[in-house]
Length: 234
Ligand SMILES: Nc1ncnc2c1ncn2[C@@H]1O[C@H](COP(=O)(O)OP(=O)(O)O)[C@@H](O)[C@H]1O
Ligand SMILES: [Mg+2]
Image (cartoon, rainbow, N blue to C red; front, side, top):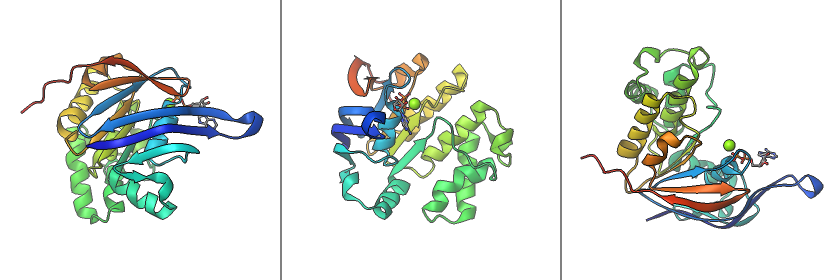
């Protein structure tokens, strides 16, 4: 099934002489069951593209259709509702809430979806334990290392079981072993036939997890190389 369809998608910041054309006519189809990697140099438009696909940034021209819904046809309220159930976004800068504990941060998407707080925290703790953070459940994000904060951000990105998970450089702060652990979870446990994952990365260590790799170059996507999918674990 088709998860994402972008056609001649354009996103520009500012206008006139100050305009920055960050996404310049992107065509992209991502199917459910697919883990797509997007690579490319800094400033090539990767974060902008995935932010548009996640419904976080508006776009000026073209089509951006996610699970059969066109963002441009939704008002702000509809878009917010659509995003909180269907989209998980792992920010490069984490965007964790410093006043909340690790568990509370991860529980946020469940609370937004109306899950009762005891249940939300129980599920958050389970996920954090799976990510090797069982001794940090009550810790504030500012007392955690970069790698630990990154894992919190990743847990928050998929705890509500969104149909699309978008991750901006999710392994940048992780050592090899932890990066592998996170990608294993995303690929083998989180990804399924109803769901798609897009990962922006500079990290060649995780290329082998991709079903497909595309390269962003100056606001446009080009095919990089095909990868053989990893065997599914049973
Ligand atoms: N909020 C913004 N306002 C103006 N220009 C921006 C903004 N965010 C990104 N840009 C510009 O858009 C281009 C693409 O940026 P970005 O999507 O962050 O690229 P990447 O993620 O590949 O590094 C760059 O030239 C960047 O400077
Ligand atoms: Mg970026």
